[in-house]
Image (cartoon, rainbow, N blue to C red; front, side, top):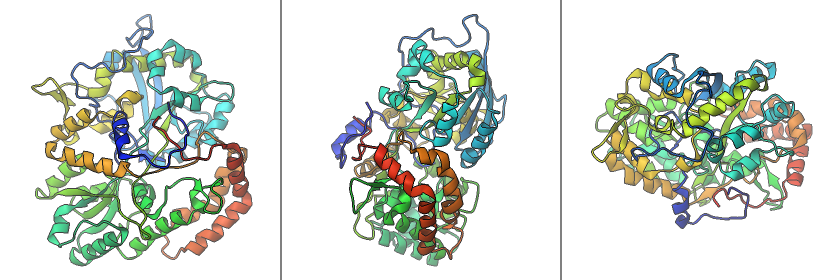
Length: 547
C-alpha cells in the first residue's frame, strides 16, 4: 500500500522491491513528469499471459446486448503528434473490443494550457485526461459535479479496480469517500539518465565525468573541438525537468522540501537555493554555448532527441537508450552511447534520481456523458481481461514476433509499418495495471528485439545506480490549500511564470530578478498558501511510495 512514511534513504537492497513494479519509462515524462507510456506494446515477455484476471462482470467488450461500445476520448501524446484516424491498428482494436472510440489528441507540451480552456468551456469529450484532484483546477470542477462518480462502476468491474493499488484509490477519494478520477500509474523511480556519445568522448580523450565540474569541462572541450556538435541537449520535455536527475547533484529535489531553518516547515522549490542554483547553472551553460540554444525556445519538445539521433549532439539529459541508439546508428553506424553515473555536485552532494508521486495524470468521465460511463468501463474491463494480450503486445508480425521460446518480442518502432508505430498506438492507450510496471524480462526482450541484447545488463546496472539515491518531494499532492485553489494559478502567472519561463530565454535575467519577483508572489498570497499547506499536512516526513 502506498503511504507517507518516514524513510531517509532507500538501500540498494530495496531494489528487489522496486523491480517488481517499475515502468520502463525513461525521459520523455513525466509531468511532473512529462514522460508517458509512448505506446510501445509488449510489457511482458510471457506468451499467453492474460494479465490481471480478477473476477469481472464479463470479460468481453461490447454492451450486454452485443451492441458496439462508443465514446469520445481526449488525451495528450508524448511522442510526435502524427496520429491519423482509421489506421490498421485502430481498426483491429475496434474490431476485437467491439468499440468505436473518437480519439482526439493534443501534444503534451500544449496539453495543460489547452485542456483547461476546453474544460472550463464545458465542451469536453466523454473521457478526458487530466491532472486529477491533486490539481486545484480539476478538483474545483470535480466539486462542481462536472464528472461522473465511479464508486459503483469500480465495484461492478473489479478488474479495473484491481489495476490500481488501494492506497492510490484512497488518495483519489474526496471527503465523502467518492471517487471520480481514474489515475494513470507510473512507478515512482523513473531515472532520467545523462546519456552521452561515448565514441566522441573517446575520440577527444575525455574520461566519463563523475562530477558537475567534470561535466562542464567535458562540454567545453567538445565545443572547442567539435564545432558541428551541440555539447548538450535534452529529451522530450521541458529542459529543467529533463535534467531533474542532474538537479539532484545540486541537492535539488525539484519539489517541496524542509526548510533549513525549520525542518517542520516545508517550502516549495521556488524558495530553495538549491533549485535556483540548478536552474541558473543551466542558464550559465547556455550562455557559454554548452547547452542547446533551442532549449526553452523551440516549442517542439522532440528537437533535442532529433539532434542526438542525427549525430548532432554529444550529451542528452534524458532520452531512452532503446530508441536513441538504433536511430543514432543509422546516422553513424560506429556511434556508441553510455550513461553517466549520478554526478557529484559543486558541494560534493551525491546525485541520484528525483522520485515522483506514482500517478501521472489519468482521466475523468464527463458528467454530461454519464450514459457512456458504463461503456467506457466495459472497454477498460475488456482491456484488462480478455483484451490484455492485445493491449500489451498488439498484433503478431506487426508489433511483435514470437521467438523460439514462445516469447513475444517487440518489433522496434522504426521497423514497423506506419499504421503500427507508437504514434498510432499511444493515443489509444488507457490503463495499465500496477502489476505490469516492472518486468525486467519484458525490458530485456525489448532490447533483444532492437538488436541491443548486449546493452541490457548495462542499462539495468545504471538504473540501479540512479535508484540507489532517491530525492523526494515532501509535499503530499493530495493536500490542497484553499487559497491556492482560489488564486494560486493566477498569482503564479502574474509574478513567477515570466521569470521562470525566461531563465533560458533571457540571458540577462539574474537570480536577483527572480528573487524580487518571488517576493511579490509571496506578498500576493503565496506565503499564505505555504502556511496553509504546512498547517494541513501534519506528516512532514519524507514520503515512501514503496511499502
